[in-house]
Length: 162
Image (cartoon, rainbow, N blue to C red; front, side):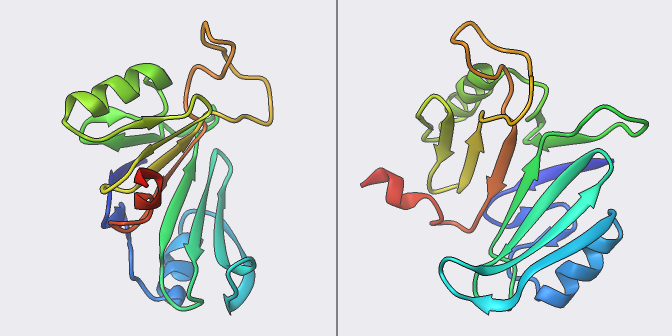
């Protein structure tokens, strides 16, 4: 199973702006679905659709309670399926985090590296190295690979530039 990150448009099979019902139905094709705060547009407790596959999770953010605002993919776990998440040909979860950021910067993208978190404003990708379990560590003592990536609309992370 392959996923392509296509910010600011979305990810494979889940275009930003898609209706919540469409997202829910497509997520069900990936595995179990859980919905939090169905229809809510509250800034703190907005609607989320979680696709729970045996090897990965995707959190679909539906901040207005109606349409897909952002998609957050978590690192795939080992298992029977080969699961790859790519951005412009780069394997996001099998490329060491610091190397991935160098490659993104090499594409002329603005990269903001905050050690545990990294952001690509204007393109709208956000990464985290925070892990809730044992993972391989880099020489800086932090997880070697990013643990999650969020793809949002064009200006999602532009506030980081201020």
